[in-house]
Image 1 (cartoon, chains in turn green, yellow):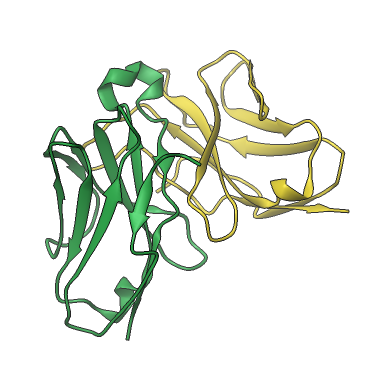
Image 2: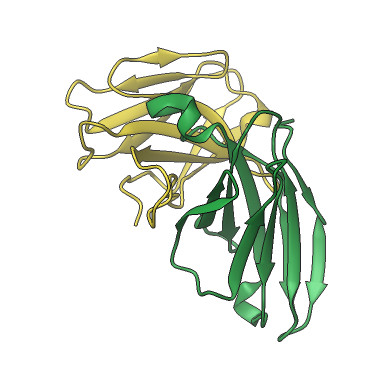
Length: 118
Length: 113
C-alpha cells in the first residue's frame, strides 16, 4: 500500500464525452504526477502539479487538463474523449523538490483508473 | 524516448537470484538510475535507485558499473510474487516537458516454481 488512492477504479465512456479522474496523494507529499498507460506499453507522462501549479507537461493535447487542490489531491480531466484515450491512468505522488536531488523522482503510484472509451 | 535498453523478458526459478540487466550508455553525470516494477493490473512500485555506488535495501540490490553505462538489479531470492514488469529509468530531471520518469517497455520477469 502506497497511500495513494484513485477513483473510480473502472470507467466506461463514449466517444465525445468528458471524464474526471481523482487522486489522493500520500500524506506529506506536495507533488502529483499523472501518467497514461496503454495496453502493453510503459506509462507515459501527462503532467505534474506542484503546490497547485502545473510544473511540466508531456506530449498530450490541451483537452487533457488537471487541477491540484490545497490538500494536494488532484484531478485529471479529459474532454472530447477519443477511442485512443482508452488506457490505465495512473497518479503518483512524491516529495518533489523537497525530496532532494535523487528522492524527487521517487514516486508512489496508485492502482490506477481503467478508462474504456466506446 | 527512454534512455535505457532492457531485455523484453527473462525467466527465473523460484528461490534463485534474479539478475536483471539494463544498458544506459548515454547516461549523464547528474542522472540517477531508478528501478520500478509493475505487477499485473497494479501501479508501478519503486524498488531502488543509485548514482554510482552499489545500493542495497530490503527489496533488492543495485549494481552500477564503474563507467555507469550499465546496471543490474538483483532480487536475491525470487518468489512467485516477484513476477512483474521491471523498469530501469535514468533521470535527473524534475518537471518540465520531460517530466521526471520516462518509462520504456521494461523486462517481463517470470518466476517459475
